[in-house]
Image (cartoon, rainbow, N blue to C red; front, side, top):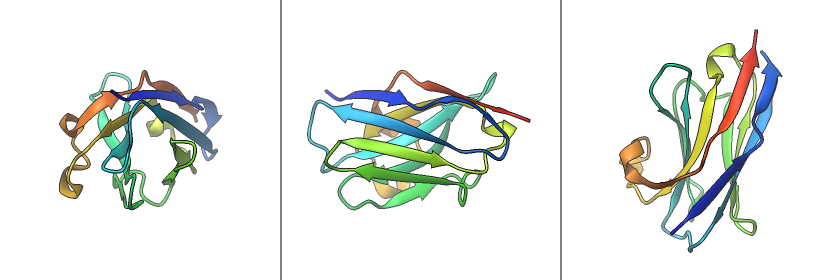
Length: 125
């Protein structure tokens, strides 16, 4: 069992930055991938970024590549999502997830077994 707790959401103006955190606990993570997904208002949940816990290898959605950075702190069992140059279309509830997908499946929600409760990010224009 894995517990995930997100924090760091809030209201920011377009062009601003926010850093989300996801604190993980409950099991070892050597074979785990931690991912961020988001669900904009009235839309389906979508992949944002993911990081392989052991190697640090990352994967980004095209819509955030170059603006968002995912990273991890092994000692704190925490994953971060640094979001820069935020746009109104980044407004969503952001979810942290944990699973063991193969690299080619890192973007698929069904590959993740554990989810956090979500944190709201609102970007005003």
